[in-house]
Length: 422
Image (tube, rainbow, N blue to C red; front, side, top):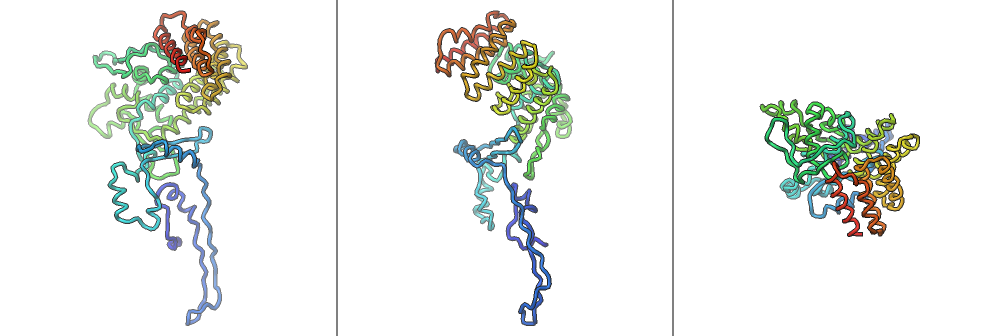
């Protein structure tokens, strides 16, 4: 009852979570009075205690920009600082005016909010969730690396339709066959076949174990009440909610974020940071983990996290500087050059990428050379250098053809597009 004198309390969001700390405590003064109610003297006094100050991590300009970017569309967005994990922006639209609740919302205003089919009172980032779709693929790729099931350079041949052994039914890729596909290509081109096959080979038990290790199926711990823990597909979960057994096909589609999945946007954002940071930490612990660092760079670049990709590329460069391995130096040059392009420094990026291309050629590694050459073509185009030599450079690492014929055609087409739009 000591706080009953307060007229306002935090009902939702951080105001509710930190209610006790923010409100402070009411002060009291006990006064002796005469029969007429006139104060005679003070008997006791309890001073008021001010509430604590709360500084949010929200970047107001970023929050406004995220809101404006949606225009008239409904949706949600989260921006997280990869260095600290702090939330810089969190948008759930449509929103509502919280001032309506300050002195008691009217019946009409409350009914309008409740009847709105877009549910403005519902925080999509924390309370919502749904199948993550292809956004889960980088996490499955990272699980394959962490578990030792795949190396970044390991390739599978995508025919565009995956079949479980002994079954006629196929699981198709909407984009058709992608040919030989390594980890980087699987993420960059969202190749379903790669993840159908990977999920099947991993099995649902290990799949569930690794996804939970990356934070799915549990609350992130954000300081907002009512967070949805989500669902990671598993036979155990299905047994509690259905009389049907677990089918292998459900494992296959879980690999592309379909089926019984339920993930919040906040979990995806936190998972991107925690998963990549974990890969970087593990790679720093042993020199043999250089491929893991290189894969972390690619995953972070694909996710648009240039800051974290730069950190991973720098770690790889340090590792290469103390190594005699030509392959490791080529990997570091490629990673550094790619990140420089993402940072907008095409000139410096081109220098590093050409070092990598030269190394791949001398090592007789045409597939790796093809990847570097494609980036070189883009860098040349952005610098206004559209000579035939640049196009030839994009094609140079693919002279052996054979298993990389499909990749050769894709790279040449990509290089031509870069030059056409320079």
